[in-house]
Length: 488
Image (cartoon, rainbow, N blue to C red; front, side, top):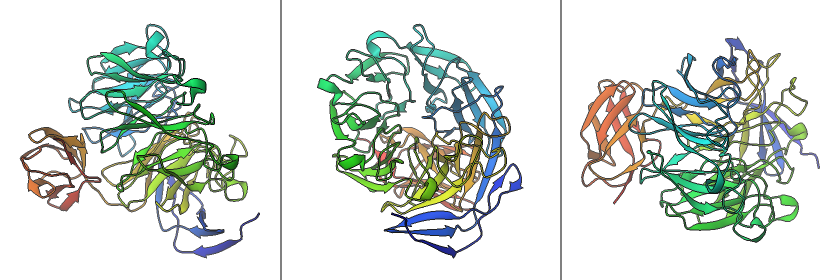
């Protein structure tokens, strides 16, 4: 079946890459049984830096950058094995080399140190958990092998109890990988062993980072196993009580998707959102919503347009930006042809909670792909309102790029961590914080110290309740992008 196409121009489309203006590219929006092709309002795509081996190459497939306490951004590259730092202006530096294949990104704790995993290396060459200081001092906290599992393929999440949680891709007591807990000092405990159920109906091959939801439970995905051997969504408590929530390919011809390679994001409505790399009505992968109890809805099946111009094979998860919409990438598909294959070089897309998808950018829009290709790693939104990401290949040297996409969203503040007890000191990250006169937690005034133009240290006040954080600056009030949760 071929969908009719309607053409309408609603504004100019500006893409900036390597200081060159790219040709305006129409975007595709699937609306019911029709396809609306439009030109988007002005937005700016910028290639900030190209990796060149010396500073890394090929950001890992499950990596998303983060905003550090110093206001700059941090991430990893898998091929050279670096932790890198980049400013919003595109100045890229190497923090340290971690030797071997950090597939996932890093998390930063309130003490300023970064924590992550490597897929290989370590005492048994089966992967590690590492710590690195802001000035590059690297410490291996754990070497995987044997019962702790092999080959972690994702980064860590720090839970509200202060410990880190993660997964290994394979082995462990039952051969399908593990869910583990590790303290900042390196004390590791296996909480769950995948494939402990007959035929691995509990899943195996976890390749994405976990998230901790507002109910305190951890949620994740496996790319393999499950009732239909096409991956699962699961939940696990911080103490190790495991529940399989959903097995993909449970509908005819895998219309619900399969092989989720990415993790989940919890939206403001409390539900979880994610992607599958395959399956769907058109076998190009899907975007889905799932409730914390396991009720799954497929929001969009990619490759709905001719030649998959709406994208194909999303390998990264979604982010919910401050406009309430979700943003993600596909590793293939898109409008542009490229030296990396006729299937296209990937896209950036926006999707609403009701499943209306808009392609914002198709990679390799310029000759030889200076804007990058194959954006398998995930996106993140900085407190300046701009969305940032990386590609695995393309760029000036073919080793991938760091890019930004400005779509007109305003600045906000972000708490690190996003949940704490009254009396706890937390970091508030933002832009233009110099001259701040007030910080409040859901309307309750807090004591604070201004550390820099991008960081405030605030104390969670007594009697504060769960709600948004507000910072009053000379330029106006900045609101947090999600609610700060008060722990009992």
